[in-house]
Length: 441
Image (cartoon, rainbow, N blue to C red):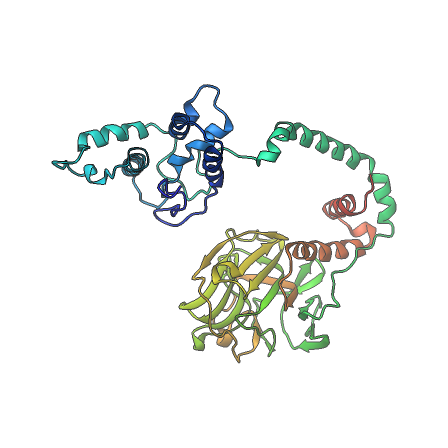
């Protein structure tokens, strides 16, 4: 496995993720079962070309897929086809012949058993594979196979029909459940999110139709003067926080070792950039934290000093303009920087790009928490961005609780509307909630 470069980096340009452990397991099982040497060799070299090939024989060819590949912009496909063939030739020679043949890639050695001509004759075996030269930074660079666990394989073939049958049963039930749903809808109630929570140290409902903003800080009501325009939102009117920065005070500070969760409902127009909410001081090398938009993509910084000791995460895609999205960020200060941050949009962890992933030291700052910018107007939010139901928790919310927050606040608002004011889309949302949570078989 070591000589086959199983644990080597996956990428020439960047170290992409790969899941090739089924090949490792195949090698271990081959040794455990005392597989004949010729079979062990043939299946790793050409298992996918054997008559009536099995899944395991295809997995065995992972030997020649352990090499580093690239998707770098500007890379020349023909050049990398040659590089990959050279890599495979050197690896096959080392593993199966016990020879280091790398020198022959450039010139003949007087006493080397392999000439340059022979070396490149062998590379021809690896120049007709269906694998493209550029991997597109794709974790599942084709050709590939999906490999069920051994205990699941017997059932695997029937899963497609099982899923189809279950889908039909659900569709049938959806049609017949409507009368019960209408009965429930007459007095519909949705359990509210857990507001009596000592870890919810800051809650800004942001539902006022005018005047000051009101919220709850450590269980105590508080309000802040604000002259912001308002728009319709899931829970009532919501302030357009891009109108002007609002100072909130000495709130929502945390340290590098803390675990926190923060976010709320965001609606934007266009692709704005700037701080939705921040406790960050540019004069201290941007020490602090923020909830940020980068060209419409949700993002967050947690910084000691930028960029020597900082974390930044950016969602892969911008929010859809004109629609409300629930955005939550988690930061786990108990783990290494590259694992510390995550972004959830509408209840789903969306991944995203992270950098530099090396935050340490102290991230606390004496500047206040602000809506719409960092300290002294830095990174003032541009465009038109509204915010509602912002929450800051001093704990790491599990994914299901984040999903519930995204759903339940919206459902409460819809359920509270008079029947004649609910749109078809809102009724469909309630019906989906009813089927998933209340409908009995």
